[in-house]
Amino acid sequence: MEASKRQGKTCIYPGCNRPAVPAHPLGGPQPSFCELEEHNALTAHQERQRIEGERRRRSGERGI
Image (cartoon, rainbow, N blue to C red; front, top):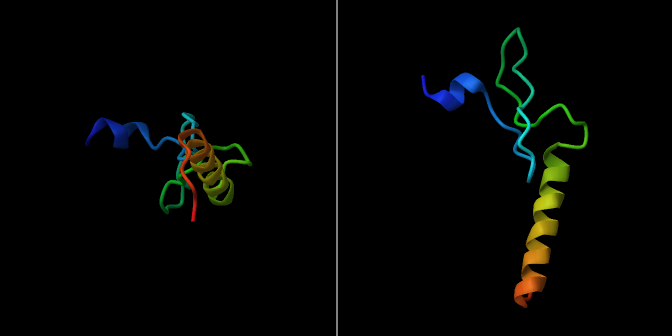
């Protein structure tokens, strides 16, 4: 088994390096986010949008 699977996932929230919550003991996939309540799919999407907007402003790009 490769090292990343043995150690588990890392939270996929932008900029977070915390380990993702472990899988439920009765089965199912391991969650993709850490235990911080504010790290979830919606806030991760919003943060990625915010980061992209800042990047565009710095580079002078215009969004559609």
